[in-house]
Amino acid sequence: MGHKGGLTAALTALYIRIVHATSRVTRKGRHDALFGEETFAVGFWHGSSFCYYPELQKRGDFIITTKHKRGNLIAAVGRRFGYVPFHMPDESDPDSTLLDIRRLLSTASGKHICYSMDGPLGPYHVPQRFFLTTAWLAKKRVLPVSVTVKHKITLKKRWDKYIIPLPFARIDFTFHDPIEVKKNRFDELIAEIQRVMDE
Image 1 (tube, rainbow, N blue to C red):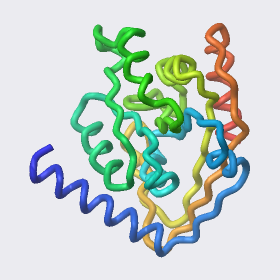
Image 2: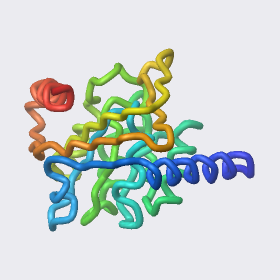
Image 3: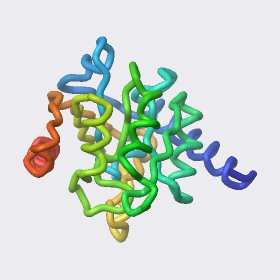
């Protein structure tokens, strides 16, 4: 990432810190699970990913990005919060074989993997099979996290209805019960995650 990209990442991280320092942030549900011995595939919607960076900062957990310009910015911001960026091939990439994913995930043992479940391009609020495949290969249960924000800007023309919290916002995280991933239940799991997240 060049100088301009580095400056964008620095300013984005600074803004996120200001928002979280001035906002009322609450955490409900299974937040405690993040600090036990088990590690998870922590999933949130792409549109609320801006809110998530401070939640597991300075732990060395992985944040999944894909190989495109926006993914590079996510990786750069993630580094400033202590995450380890994990560049996955796009699902449409012919090189994104299961062997490649296994090789990448071999370094993720003992760490959470944080991932926008409907990213990078949607559809809106539909967990991607690639996310479930990653969790299954990493032998991690999915820990869904939903976010609601009061006092925000919503980019309604974007496919993900991206949320940018404003200073002095109210940000509520709900950490749902972990969900086991089984390869022969992907379609059921997609529906289950949608139901849990949208309640």
